[in-house]
Image 1 (tube, rainbow, N blue to C red):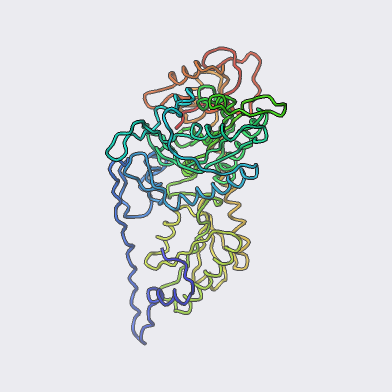
Image 2 (cartoon, rainbow, N blue to C red):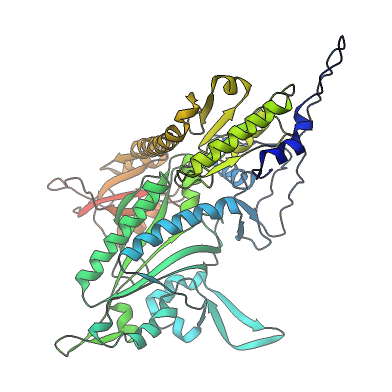
Length: 547
């Protein structure tokens, strides 16, 4: 793709020859311009161990429809839209700039918000010694199957294997014990933006489930439980904001069951997303109150104001690049990505459409106007791309940017030049509107906000339609078979949850589990019983099959 030219004259000098046909001599019929064929891209071969075979990349568009084969559609989309490339280690992926720039938007928004709370960024090493990793028994047991170990250095076996962090509690907390000695050292609120490795072996899926992924992990320490509890919910609200305000993805906030909570935590809160197309829940992000469990294990003790001794109350919380996968699954369609404006790397693409018979000065004027629109919109903080390429037809370029999910396409052709209007086409709905030049600078930002709101509203309506309130096992299974979630009264016991998971598994689908116990609870009728066990119900839980 050609970059936006610094000077229109340079563009004209390089491209007008391709766009314009010399005027025919008197009495001579004008020659037809041969449209250049788009250059075929080389087929990208999947690297050994890189997962599923990739389709040929010789043409735009997707060969699989979302409704026909969701998994294949998704795998095809993330490659065709240039979000990822497969790597030669199975379960690992290369994040290309189009994907990474969206992660940067999420990073900036979340980072700005946590810093307002007094959180500071830091960085800790990725290696953990075996004895430190084993300090907290429940914690390490929860991660043991996923821990990757370094056992060799060069040609020599290492005396002691070193773990690659699956999470950083055991990396950080020995040093918290050194730094925290007095109540004056609290609160300690650190966050790090980093990668972690969890050697997943079941169904690796780009963004959703991979062996290495990017995330932020916050680790904080407080003098009191009340302070820790407050932060848990503040962070969870920020996570809900990432999904709903940035990614236009609805989520349910709630608390994890004891069976599903973070290993070693006092309790875990979560934001839960849902993909209607395949009926799968997705844990969007979690905020844990660790209580004093880790502080006792690692000796994080401080002198109180009354000169006593107390262990710190701790939290940990994390958000990963999984969030991008949830957004892609939620909004994508058969044409490609559909990106919410607030995270789209480019919010508007301007495509000039000169005719092959246009005079050089007409082409120059059109390009000059495109340049003016770009400058005007960028001064309003709109992220703009321009597509001056002449070796592709307008239709090909439309498809290219639709595949990449740019929210607005601005078209400028000869008639638009005459009428001093542009065409704005929405990626989410396909709707078009004509806008006078003098209104472009105000209309585009308004339309971007409207698209953002409409995408969330549409996704929320689908999400809500996928929640069925049930009170019996038969209704519960019917909801699962409809690819829905089930909101059901239950006894809040691990044994019941394990039984439900086993009983709800079928030949074609995995068993269901609790996604969360929603904070917003419907009234529980007097005498209500658990839908699965018949025992007295303690609350309503949101259940579903999940990634």
